[in-house]
Image 1 (cartoon, rainbow, N blue to C red):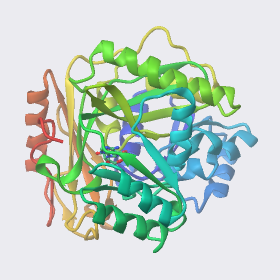
Image 2 (cartoon, helix red, strand yellow):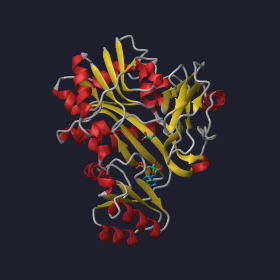
Image 3 (cartoon, rainbow, N blue to C red):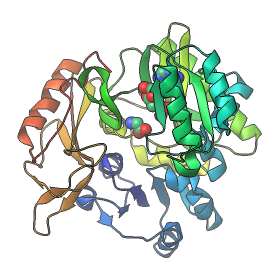
Length: 418
Ligand code: AMP
Ligand code: GLY
């Protein structure tokens, strides 16, 4: 099978790393990819979605796997369907589950999926009036894609008013913020659940937990994710069954009924509350850096699963096989991340390690044989071992081996805090 992976981050490097182990793989392309993916396959530069479709046709690509959400929201799966190329990732209509938080909330309302109480607004005055009646803290979310920056947790009414003004009046998020969702603040432990679906049948993957804030103990601004571990000890098999029946099945059945079947991976960000699991958000693609800890634990060949999901032929038996242990991914971020990451710092120590792998994200070749930083999240250092503590130790051993000026990471990945 000839496979093309769309994206350039640690998630795409991890997908390529796992796909490379498949006996079914004959050729692997990435667009645009990164120096890490260039070691696994061929990086190709394609200007836009139209160029990608053309490349897939000319090269008789059997499967396109889409990493990030934006091309899905823009309809890349629909364009590929028109020329008969299988795409792992949903149609634009189904990608609205991530592309519009108001749409996702409507689906949850329609199907009784547990989520925070909310209202959506396009006008400032009614939004301000609604906030005045709610308890604090309160959460304000830009409706559309905002690169992980669209959520503000407001401790005071003043902060909530400012967040609403920024989105609805000052256009801080552009069109993505012309609708806002105001929702109840939930407390509990967060967990990420990924479920692969072919439009009808579905298979859950093992759970992961992300550490979102820049600093230890949930402090500092939210980032795309500073590290992850898997599996999450909070999600017992009983809880997983509940998540499948109360969240996954209703959403997939709804989308199918509406004539917009979901093909790809649904990544549900959950809050595990005293009243059961509640959905914080849906994403329509693999998590980054969740993928970096999920895939190293997967024993089963990933390629047929993704191809079956893309073509509506998912085999749910035999069940996926997982390695027994745990995996931990520590993100090394550049100085200035997430606001204004510095680029061009020389990276040392990237290589092959036992029971671990260096997934590249914001890296660039220095023009010779070396690497320099080229983005906010530079590397994801992933290690696995029999238990979480041992996996953590291994991951932090990798942290000590790899260096660049301004290297920033959290010391508590895989620990108890968020
Ligand atoms: P989202 O992009 O919607 O997942 O939001 C980003 C982060 O904001 C989540 O991972 C949570 O940590 C936090 N968050 C979002 N919605 C809520 C909520 N209703 N209550 C508490 N925290 C939330
Ligand atoms: N790690 C969170 C995300 O991929 O959205």
